Length: 132
Picture (cartoon, rainbow, N blue to C red):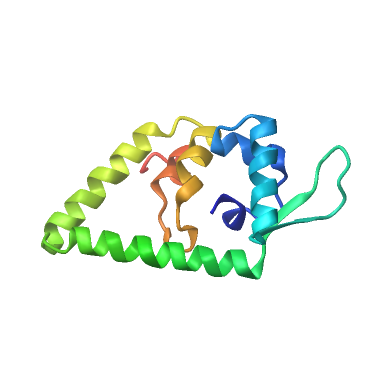
């Protein structure tokens, strides 16, 4: 999810949001490459390879998002619209309170479905938006 949200990052740039050591991140990336979900692009060298999801990885990610969305809709189904809106506002306040800087924002956003997050409270808080 993090690689798809931020393609062309290196292993080093990936490890921070995931809270992994460099060797742990390298092993994770190798497993993703071996599974055919991620590919390394660009020159290796000191900066490292850039990571991008493969077509198979994107399809898998879409399946995961669809399954998560279905599970959440099922969970929220008993709530009327006004309670769903109140829950969303409460969750946004909690996320905003947990966002202290860009690093915390990247950590919180690591599992987000970025394409559906038009008014991301985490990004706004990291950017210092007073209305976050």
